[in-house]
Image (cartoon, rainbow, N blue to C red; front, side, top):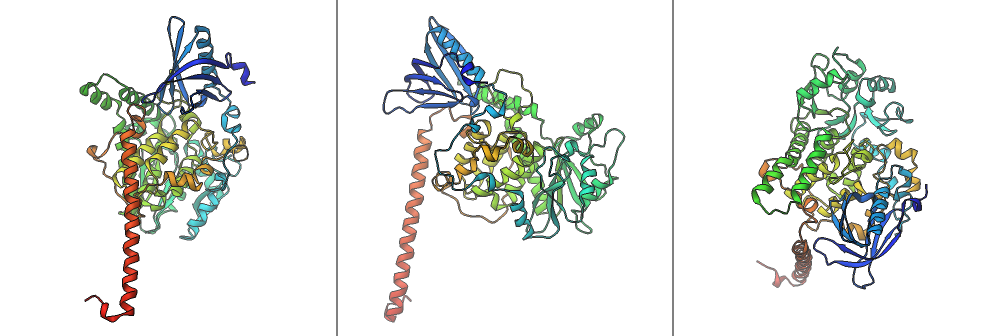
Length: 549
């Protein structure tokens, strides 16, 4: 298919662009296969380059022969284009609708994008499972890297290489996979260096109404326990939801078959409820009524902060079991691709200082989201403005980023990256020139040859000038476990995402610049103090009479 077939009017002059807190711009609107571009002849005006894949929905309005298109984006931005001429406006609108809803992944912009920067490090090779396993090997010899899934036949959503207990063979893994939802047998998620405890993740067991059991599954998870130790199974569903899953062939581990494991049920909501919550939250944030009661009741009705609290609470529980109870943990929900990953990745943010660095966080997203089979293509197909009926969309990853931001806000000196880095990752998960978040699994990415045909987001982020921009100026490496407060009073609305386009950031930007200046000046003074101390010490050694009492 040619993009030209979908573009009815490629160019219109005299278009006026309205953006919140920015001056209006008049210029020429151009449509290409992947971008909506508005450029002005005024020298000091920046151009608008908007990816069609970032467009969630559009609305058309007409006053006489003047048409307006309101463009609502997946990054929650809303812009308005005033287009002279009804026919041009209708043509532009239908072209945008067609270009922003292309189903074929191979027509997406990452396959056409050519980087304008020098790729110093290929991000596709930066976080390979075999490299992560080398770090594990330096700490313990109790695990091995299995190739049981090398052709993706055992579990379509797992990567080809997975870390499993050393003395559990591949046959046992294959049989255990038939007992877990989607073939997602228990695999290693995290090894806690301090005490050797581990966190595993999986899909739900397929016990069904007959209470089916699987000796191989029991053997696999028991192999992670130390002699005389008990473990915890954290089921991210309520006991009622887990019971209902039995009627559909799913279920949970029974105490009789897993006597060394204690099961704890939490209440993280399913995907469709989270999507409704995001829609309600964004609607509340865009409400212009200025009524305090209305704002607070809409915010509460969205339940977004409740979801943040529940996910953080469950992650703290997992971290507590590992670090304070000295117990290993298995985490699962239903599929094991949403709430499970939120919990395992956040627990690592709490426990592992390496995950709080820029590079460590990239590795975490690779391991616990991309390689672990979170279906990004399905979950991020729509954001909060789409008019079409939600299918499998859900802000699971955005909720994870929100939870990370909550911890960052409570421990502002313990993270190497700034809030801007989290916002950047959110934006690229929904629409990007990079191939990192395309597809639903490693298998799909391999089939599409993404590492060969597209550029990785990490190739761009890991350039020195970009790293400098995304680094938190307050960062001081903290090797401790950090325990966030999950009290409702401690959890705030993430304004940097949800109110970003609803108010001017001028004052915040100025305050940030001032903070950076103060920190730089403080370092300069510190260096002067150190230099003077060295000079004084040298003088004292040269002349004993100068020695301080």
